[in-house]
Image (cartoon, rainbow, N blue to C red):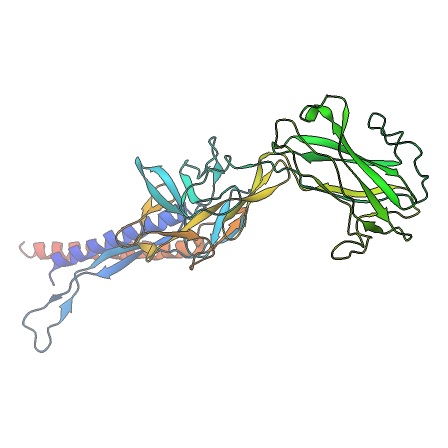
Length: 434
């Protein structure tokens, strides 16, 4: 091998270790970049040359080193809690999918950086405005099958009309039997006890309903449900209108025995008419099947009181907040107290993820070597689970990188010494002519 070849061999070492230092420097620079994946330079020896004329097997000498590739190290990074609902991290394999323009090119990109937020149009986006891809949900909370942009602020909770009012109370058996007939225009003076609740019509409008109880015999109480006529079809504002009445029967132990046969209609203004409205007073002993008579309204010798009044309707609602579970399902909490699934974050996986191409902005793009993305739900098919309110740190190990930097520096210096030594010997060769 000639001295000229020695110069060339030393130069390959300088180039390779220079590349190694560049990779190490990139890793160190991104040690605090969320979701960053470290790389390492992979070296391979250059083609060897045979020395002609030797006896036996021809000895070989190498021609130096080359950088074979820069390999991505897709190991899991540590997770850090942030408490922000739109921050998400992947615990396991896969990448988030975002769509938009990166480096002037529109396309679909992939990232481990889950620093997401909601833009002014209500889309879930990354910090560069690329839209996160996932699955939308129907008004019933059923996930749809085609991935696309996740628009969260378009989700709303539609109103649901009240179908049942459930009452738990005690009606004092010691109260006197009412002498006067119930008068809707003067209900307080012609009843023994009252309570109230709000019911909702098909438009989500609330109607306050006052329920008055009148003791009509030793074992019977009549109830009268009244609401303001201004909220009823054909009603008069400020005038209480009866929408339902019936009679409750109790036994000598104060247990509820017979459910009422109600009369009356509820016709809310501009909404579905009539609206079926059931008042549930408990489990009568004479019901089918027979109940205990103790779980709803009772008539014991105790002061009349209401334990609870509930109803199953609600008004329309707007989105207040979101939560994301380990499967990527996004649940919205609405201003009307309701909640439902409004979407699902998609996760992509690849046959050879370390063959993806790096793009600025902590993004990756597919290559022929990586294979195409297979998008699905988190925590399925080998994909990692989603951890909400957390971010994945860079997987760069600073101590390892600093040790590698020292080794690369010494290798660079040693190869430089090869070049200077060969140069010195060439100088001696040139001096032979003198």
